[in-house]
Amino acid sequence: MAKPLIESLAESKIYQDYGRAFSEATGLPVALRAVESWQLPHHGRRFENRLCQMLSRKSRACAACLQTQQRLSETATQEPKTITCQAGLCDTAVPVRMGGQLVGFLSTGQVFRKKPTVAQFNRAAKLFADWGVTAKLQDLREAYFATRVVPARQHESVVRLLAIFAEHLSMVSNQIVLREQNAEPPVITRAKQFITDHQTEDLSLDQVARAVNTSKFYFCKIFKKATGINYTDYLSRVRTERARNLLLNQNLRISEIAYEVGFQSLTHFNRVFKRVLGLSPTDYRAQAGRA
Image (cartoon, rainbow, N blue to C red; front, top):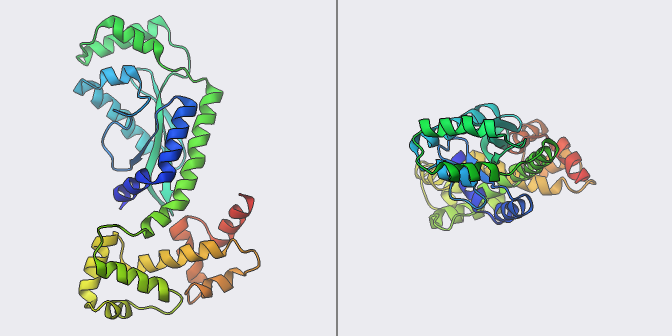
C-alpha cells in the first residue's frame, strides 16, 4: 500500500505547497518517493543540479546514483541520513511513516557541504570518463563548481525542516487513506457513508454488506480492491480519525473518547490508535497540546 499512499500524498495540496516553498527558500530540489521506488528522485524536477542532469544521460552514471538512493533507503529507516555519492555530492533522505510502517522518504540533496577543490574535480572527471559521459570537460567543470555549497549548520537546518514536515505528513496520511477516490464504485461510497453514520455502534461486516445489498464475500473483495485495506482496518481508521479530533478537547477523558467512537475496551483503543498513528492517545494529546 506504500506506493499508492505516497502517490496520493505527493498529489495533495499540503505537499505541493510545502515542496514549492521549500525549494523557493533553499534553492534545493525536494521529492517524496515510496520505499520501493527505483528511480532518480530529482530527475526532471525544478532545481535539479545541472551536473547531475548531465550525468543522468549515461546509464552507468544513473546506476551509481541509484546505488546511493538504495543505500539511503537502507540506512534512513529510523532517522534522516545523508550520504556522499561517488561524484562527491551529498544526498539526504528523511523517513515518512504511517503509524509504525515506513512508507517513503522526503529526499533532497545534490549539494556539496564543503567548497570543492580542483583535485576533487580531477578525480571526479576520471570517474565520469569511466562512466562514458561524453559532455565537454569544460561544461562538466563549470557545472561541478556551480553546484550549491551548503555549510554543515545550514544543512542541518534544511534536514530539520524536512524532518518536521515528514512528521506532519505522517499525521495527515491517515486522512489520505480515508479520502474517497473519484473512481470508486457507488457501492463503496454507500458503504463508507454507512460506516461513518454507524461507526459508534458494534458494527459488523455482515451489517455493512447487507446495508449495501451485497454478499459478505463480494463486499470484502471489492472493498479491499477499492480502498487498499480491509474492512476492519478501515473501520479502525475511521474511529481513530474521530478520536484524534476529540482528543483535542482536554475536558474529555481518554476512556470516554474510546467508547464514544465505538471501541469496546480502552486497551483495544490504545492498541489500534498507536498502530494507526504511531503514538498512544496520551502521547498524541500531549503533542497536540504543545503545537
